Length: 329
Image 1 (cartoon, rainbow, N blue to C red):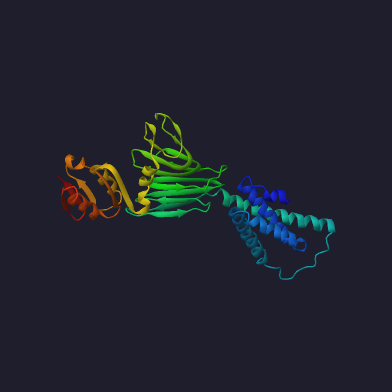
Image 2 (cartoon, rainbow, N blue to C red):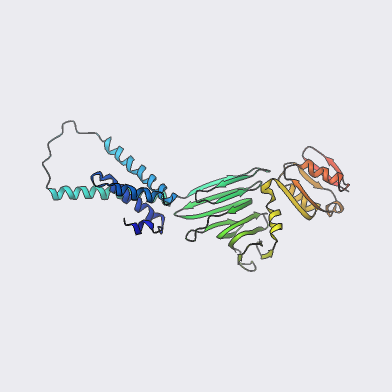
């Protein structure tokens, strides 16, 4: 392997595996393994995590093959074997090397083509931060289920329900794709928020850019390329994009700090949001109380704080029960 080949970024996982197999075959032929070879291997391994993973995986396959060979039962009475001509000896040695590489290739193919699917879930009121092997980070909000899938260099995630903040390590050759509620978000170098409310999907672009596409034939505008500040809302029939300031987006992410920030929000909206984070629900008993508008910053899982605010600052009637708090005028 030349230095130019080493410096070149591998086009695919299969090419990385081929390079790892080449190093293993060369190292197995120890009389010809030099300090230069060792230095080249060390530089290649330090080039990326993908190199290390491929080499360790194939090295494990190689070692298992050697152990199996050592465990083969020897004949009880070995019989002398006539010396083989040198050409035939070289041919068998080459055939053995090819066979080992073939075994490694088959084993690698099985491992590479088998997808790695991982499911993450948070309870009501819970949060979790996921650190992926590619350097990406995903923050899960309350009552969220997410599945990640990695296969042959392809990266994707499915937001089954809930809300997640994606901070994706961009790779132009292997874009990160998020599917949710029949829609698809493709990373173009991005930090973005995805929220599934059941009847609609909201995507807020914080940094970079992303492409949102809908699978619904009846949606108005099937594809939207989002830029920082864009907030897209997709339903089974529509796809619309509005703008928000950085301060408004900051407020949308306040759950990641354990608080909820409301600005000119009705009590109906505040209660609906609070109920996402708590088992004990808030019930707004009448339209007059529900129409009251507030500005407030409240702990996301402290229902009692919400009740005190409604009673002491809004002058509303508060009835506290075991599983719910009823607020009326």
